[in-house]
Amino acid sequence: MIIKQIAIGNNIEGFIEDSFSNGFNIILSEDNNKGKTIVIQSILYALGNEPPAFPASFEYKKYIYILQFEEDGKEYWICRKNNEFIIYNNNFLFLAESISEFKRYWDKNIFSLPRIIINNIERIVDPSLLLQLFFVGQDKKSTDNIENRGLYKKIDFYNTIYEIMGLGSIKLNQEELDLVKKRLQTLKEEKSSLIKQHKLLKSKKYSTEFLSSIKDKIAFANKIKQMEEIKEEILNLKKERNKCINRKLNWEKTIKELNSLNRTIEIGELRCMDCNSTNILYKGRKKDSFSFDVSTVEMRKRIVASINEKIESYEEESQRYSFEIQKKQEIFRKILLEEDISLETLVAYKKEVIDVVEVEKEILDINNKINDLQGKIKIAEKNTTEHKEKQDLLLKKIVYKMNEFYKAIDSSGNMIIDDIFSKSGKIYSGSDATMFYLARLYALASILNHPFPIIIDSFRAEDLSSNKEEIVIKWFSKLKNQLIFTTTLKKQEKGKYDNNKIINIIDYTNHIPSKLLQEKWSKNVCNLAKIFSIEL
Image 1 (tube, helix red, strand yellow):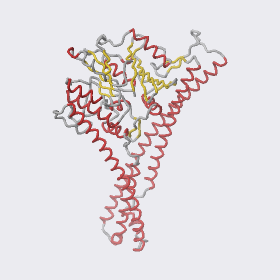
Image 2 (image 1 turned 180 degrees about the horizontal axis):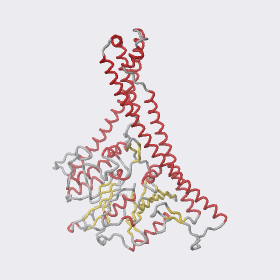
Image 3 (image 1 turned 180 degrees about the vertical axis):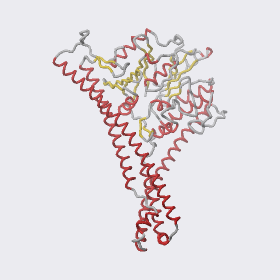
Image 4 (image 1 turned 90 degrees about the horizontal axis):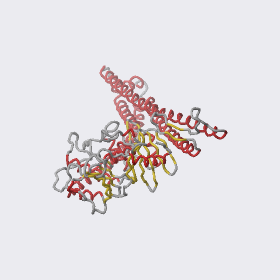
């Protein structure tokens, strides 16, 4: 994936950066507040980052963000305005009214995104978590945890890494495995009770009946708890399915309206009753949504094609939820059919009819069932163990690569990296934090072989020495990924990269401080917006 250009602005002011190379880029200036962070954060924002980390003084909601990038030889354009996106490729427009729609389109049409289990539901990873594989900002660094903590936790970042390498959660149904184990325990208890039943039948002790009763109550309580948990999962899945169906129905209504518009135009001409204009706009439901001129047949076709894509996507999503609901319902049904056989039940119902021969037959039958269930559990646990070992091995490779990178940069350093996060409560700061993040980004790109550009805002933070910086540049330049770094030079460092042939220098020194967006760029931004048929 190669970033080609990023544009920020409206019809009053704007800025466009289109001088990125496919290799190593360093955006620099001799002072701060020249717009480097705004450009970096605009790239991430266009890719779906939420919440954005723009400088506090930058009113980001006033502008649109247009990103051009290349992936697998194809050119894509993204336009973002608040939480709405338009994706343009090969004369096709897709309108996404949320980050969820945006990532679903990306997953289906650009390249597959990792899926992880969140609250027992498989979800496509949000950009806010995914970008942490390839981006480090200059603020709010916390080496012991992920950034933008909210829906996601550290374990989700680990699972994202595993999923990228084909080592995501095994598609075993945990509820079914638990049922097998529970059935196995029940059979063992039944076998034990049958062996001892002749003693129990003769026993007049109150304790045996009391113990059996307690055991039965515990088993019943556990079953109720398990059923409640599955019921809650089914309800959550149904809620998600209903959302998909409602959105699908709303878009189908929009299709009917646009098709009706087509038929009307064929037999006459539509005009505005107020101004007599023949211009007709299509606008999203939100107050600040994009507006499109649908007066032309070609534009209406684009909008209709985009909406049909949405409808198809929601249909697929609702079918997936229906399938998950059916699986949960089947587990629920199995629990209802399962019988917990207690000593009390055996004594009450079998003591009159079972003799020694019958007991032996039943024990033999139970033994066969036990062996079968133990085999199933053994295979499942073996797969789980082997899978976990592969995950641990992957993590060790990443950590090893982090230490290798760190030692190459600072051979006398005493930092020992033992995980992709520092230990809870132990947050690296200063140059150690810089080194930790550089090591992690390098290791993840090297081991995962991911397609994303590596983006680091202020890669020399905390006075990374010139000698160490040279080694950092040397190591990162070995990667196949596009690199976009930023830095602020000291006066005595002016021209320090001029003789480095691998670096594409993008110099912001002459920019007006705290005023990246200028009126002179607004026309160019408006022209780029026309790619999406947007009039600013």
